[in-house]
Every structure is written in structure tokens, then in C-alpha cells.
Amino acid sequence: MTSVNEKHPVPSPIDDPTLGLGSAEPGGFPQVDSWTLPAAPEDDPYGDMVANLRSFLDHVAAAKPDNATVAELAGDLAAWRARLAPMSVSEREQVFAHRTDLPGRGQTMSPNFAIEGGDRDGVWGTVTYGRYYLGGNGAVHGGAIPLLFDEVLGRLANSAGRSPCRTAYLHTDFRAITPVGRQLSVRGWFVSEEGRKRVVRAELKDGDTLCAEAEGLFVALNPGQP
Ligand SMILES: CCCCCCCCCC(=O)SCCNC(=O)CCNC(=O)[C@H](O)C(C)(C)COP(=O)(O)OP(=O)(O)OC[C@H]1O[C@@H](n2cnc3c(N)ncnc32)[C@H](O)[C@@H]1OP(=O)(O)O
Image (cartoon, rainbow, N blue to C red; front, side):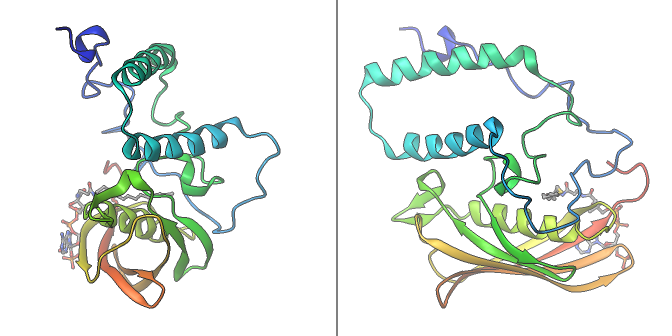
């Protein structure tokens, strides 16, 4: 029997020459100058596409479709891959994760952190983990929680005109089950900033219940450091 991958072979992403590793531009992250999102444009197809993609992934995770539906979906996805493949651009030009004017930076890899406010020293907002992030028994997958913390703390540590930095360590304590499908509060704040070292902390709460907390060290990159 032919597998889906034999019928629609998926190329490996490993040899992608459009990635910026080793480029002279340190960090490569889009910089954040303000935590306030500009008013949403009237017509924003990219934002609509990313929102639909997030919702799609939740439905893929939640559904138990019949084989005919799965085969049709595999064919549709293969057709979209073939259509998008010739449109690949360099990392600098890519739109995905570079739209800092959109909730979640216009990406679907890390949970959608909806910013409510922030300043030079901290940021706060909400997150709702969809079914896509389910680990088991209604709880969020343990790996998806540091993913959120890296997103929140990475944005904070790179904000307010600071030079680009990277995560050196990210320590996470899981204090209680993090539920899927509930709006949770998130807060990140600076602990210290000495030389190249930026120590930041974050917490994730379900109402008054502390679900998880983290401490991260972000180190400012030297010139030419990838
Ligand atoms: C809009 C923006 C959106 C952004 C959101 C997403 C943000 C995502 C951020 C990331 O996830 S970045 C990807 C994950 N991280 C990495 O891939 C980093 C890989 N590691 C490195 O590149 C280097 O190890 C690093 C740049 C972090 C540090 O290497 P360096 O050679 O530049 O620094 P060095 O080792 O000399 O350390 C500098 C200081 O930090 C300290 N340090 C470094 N790593 C440490 C560590 N792990 N634990 C404790 N201390 C550490 C080190 O001891 C030293 O302290 P002192 O100055 O006091 O001597």
C-alpha cells in the first residue's frame, strides 16, 4: 500500500538555504518598541490566514475523521504545499512570526500570547491553549509551557530598544495542571540587568492558581554572533 508520504513526499526542511543562520544580523528577531498593537487593518488576509491555521490545528487535534476525509485533507495539504513552495523567501523577508502588529506575531508555533499591556520592566496578557497543545487528561503538554515562557520573556528581554539577546537558560517549575481551553493570565518581568545578562521571570495563572513559573537568563549578543 502506498503511504501518504510516498504519494505526496514532503521535502526535508533541514537544507533550507533561505535561513539566516550565520548571518551578520544578530538575533534576527523583529524588535518590539511598543506593547500596544496598532488598530487591526480593515482587510488583513495574513492575519485571517494565521487565525484560521491556529483554529485548523485545534480541529485536527480534536477530530476523529473517517479515512475518506483524511485522504481528501492530505491531498489538499499537498496541493497547498506545492503552491507555496516556489514562494519561499529569505528569513529576513518572511512574514510568518515577523508581524509584530498581529496577536501572536502572526505565527502558530508558540501559543497565542495576547498582550494586554507592558512597559520597559514587564509585560502582561492572556493565553488560551487550544486542543492542539493537549498533553493528556485535559492538561497542556509540558513542552508547550516553556514555549510560551520563551515567547513572552524573549519578547520582553528584546524590548524597549535593548540590543538583541538569546535565551541562555529557561528554568520552568510546573506547580499545577495547566488546563486546555481556559483563558489564563501571563505576566513577565525583569529581575536584573547587568552587562550582557538579563534575568527575567514569568508566571502563568488560572485565576488564583499558579500553574507554572519560570526564570530565564537572556544574554545580549556580541557583534557578529548569530
Ligand atoms: C520580537 C522578538 C520575539 C522574540 C521571541 C522569541 C525569543 C526566542 C529567544 C530564543 O529562544 S533564542 C534560541 C535559544 N537560545 C539559543 O539558541 C542560545 C544558544 N547559546 C548561545 O548562543 C550562547 O551560549 C549565548 C549567546 C547564550 C552565550 O554565549 P556567549 O559566548 O556569548 O557568552 P558567555 O558564555 O561568555 O556568557 C556570558 C555571561 O552569561 C553567563 N551565562 C551564559 N550562559 C549561561 C547559562 N546557561 N547559565 C548561567 N550563566 C550563563 C556566563 O557565565 C557569562 O557570565 P559572566 O559575564 O558573569 O562571566
